[in-house]
Length: 253
Image 1 (tube, rainbow, N blue to C red):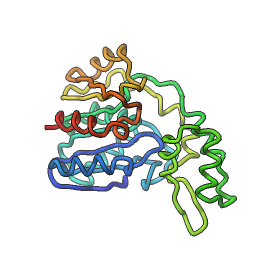
Image 2: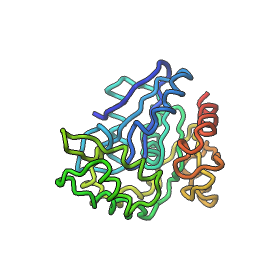
Image 3: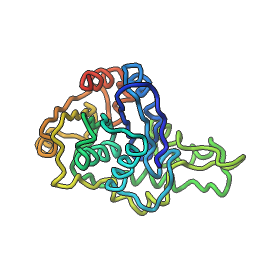
């Protein structure tokens, strides 16, 4: 069963993080939605955060995990918000189980195929040899040789934890990502359609959703609208939380 943090009372809202992330990335936003009258479920997807590790890793199976989570928690009708990899999981979940979903929010990812673009990140993470029992600073030093962007590094190092005294590890399942990287970029199946209200939110400085993607989005999600958040890249909820919250909460009302 997926690990989750649940906050608030009211209509269930599931939030799915992106690749190499975890539920903690959405803690602040989750608290705001909870204050707005939602029962917020911040999920750790498989092979991420505190959820189980598995050799099986695909959008199909992650959507199934979310369905199993809903069944186990008696969630009949939900709203669902997903960012990046979590957004594609949310799209597939909504298309497969439309009876479960009232509204869908997708943050900065489209239904299309994305070529691999995490190579330098994975190189940096794989360069860390935990058998040498490095300190937190040493891990950051190694990773910084591959990942120059400070914000990206900080995000990744949130998944660093003390497995036991003196022994750090990553919470995510790097070994499985190394062999399943192609899964992350896979498109939504052509026949996947969700007819209920859907909101796509993109960062104005991000290139994940381009204007030419609008037609494909409409084909899969006929009742969708697309909003752009200025001065924000792919991490739009962290870079411009005020706009992100205003746009998403008004859509959910």
